[in-house]
Image (cartoon, rainbow, N blue to C red; front, side, top):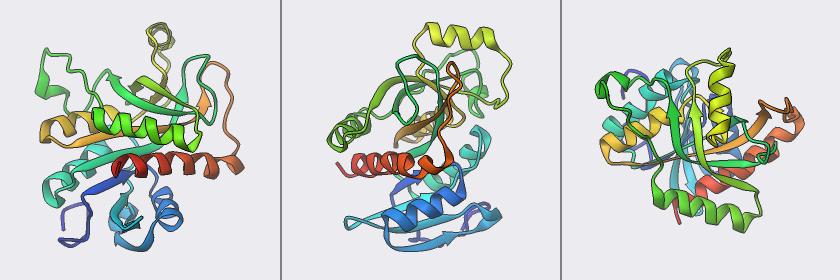
Amino acid sequence: MTVHIGAKPGDIAEVILLPGDPYRAKWAAETFLTEAVCVNQVRGMLGFTGLWNGHRVTIQGSGMGMPSLSIYANELIRDYNAQTLIRIGSCGGMQDHVGIRDVILAQTASTISTPSSTIFRDLNFAPCADFGLLVAADRAARSLGVKTHVGGIYSSDTFYDERQDLTDQMERHGILGVEMEAAELYILAARYKRRALAVLTVSDHLKTHEALPSEDRERSFGDMVQIALHAAFD
């Protein structure tokens, strides 16, 4: 048990899926896992452990933003020995060829700042995904027939961002999408020698202003969860 996770020793699997929304964690556990048991309810941040194709998996909500993600990832790694951490979440598309419902596999995660920024001082550390997970996720997406894009994303600490100049430069330099957690996850994975990946569903688009209808979200997010599970045990 930690400050933010009430699970007992042995309750948490070595493979963790991290949706930001705790109710998405509940939905994913009920949909994709068998024998799923709720192992955390502290502060309403639900976590479940169950089986997928005979493999133990924990799906733990991580909250919104890098400070929240950092708390849960740190405790899962340091206190529960998590080895593989895969963020599953939504993102905003930033390139014309990236469409609504597409899945982005984040090879790198650029950011202005993270909770770990003060550690690096003047160094612009480049957070990146585990290559083995990235390749396995790409292979899984192809076998499932899901349209995917592999490349860089932007992890923002601001949801209502008014920096159009920054957005323009990211589009210019090929950033595929924007979300709020992956960069810190990748940094922590590098620090503790763990595997990490972000598998993201494009739910809205910064350029076209399209948005995924609420009735379609569950099916599209299901693709993302399947990709993450296949990648973790490839």
